[in-house]
Length: 289
Image 1 (cartoon, helix red, strand yellow):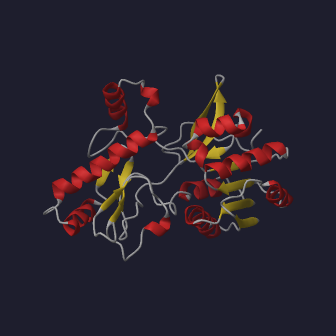
Image 2 (cartoon, rainbow, N blue to C red):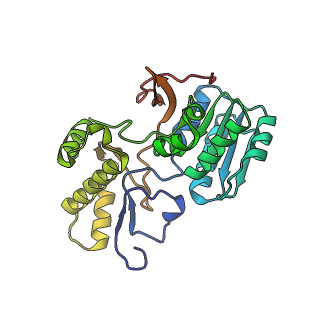
Image 3 (tube, rainbow, N blue to C red):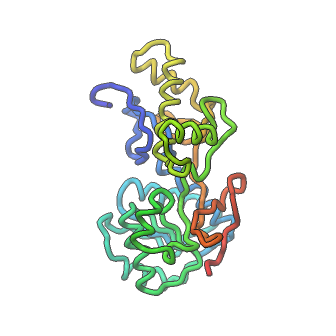
């Protein structure tokens, strides 16, 4: 996009390093920039008065940006992590790391990684028979079936994650369909059960809304006019995915991701949103049993 000077509408590529002052040709539409992701998580930890937090993160931009945001917000609330270390993104065995974390006697353990890291980390907890009051990993909320198959229900029970739509969504919108109406319409159009409508379906529709609004608003189809159009309605657009707002570099900063905990209800394990309060569908079980 930058080299060809063509505006790219990016639904879900959230790495903070993608968005730079020298590249006006990128707009993130359907997820917040990775540096924004842990905002609700940090505020949840502070609200729960959890003082001893251990953080392990992979040494890539996606995960490091989350770790640094978490550390910054916690520090602002008077909490300094008792453990804060990076590991290689290819890490497959967290045994030694978990031993070091356990030695700090944390009240919460946060692991920022990609799905394979989450799997290895959760398997390490299970294999080492570690018991922590709170465990958070990134991807079970997006790739539950894959991670559940790899580690099992028991390893996920009462752990925390980021939920994504349609686990939550917004019906009070000023552009496009609300979440409930979209799920009904999309399921009918695709001839699938409503339960099969997933985040990527919603992210794609939301990206389409932003593109449509840009085309409606732009003075012309010139790339700079399209980008200026997006800036003009940034902060004033509310869709099924949340509040659309971008910063000067095109990163999505209007949305944040809630915090969910896997809980078994009526024999079925599912993510229950526990923070922030205005999106909560249940209460956190803390400490984990």
